[in-house]
Amino acid sequence: MDEKSLYAHILNLSAPWQVKSLSLDENAASVTVTVGIAEILS
Image (tube, rainbow, N blue to C red; front, side, top):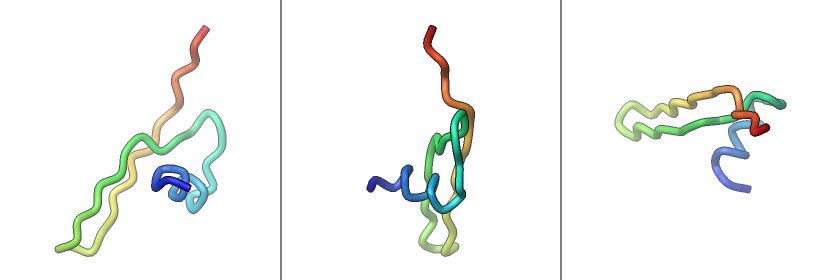
């Protein structure tokens, strides 16, 4: 499982929501997760 999938699971996200990006700040001991709506291709 990749990091984006792991955080999507932790946050219990379901379509159309998805993790767009992750940022780890070791000095602040924090993780920033950016969530967005998946693009729909037609």
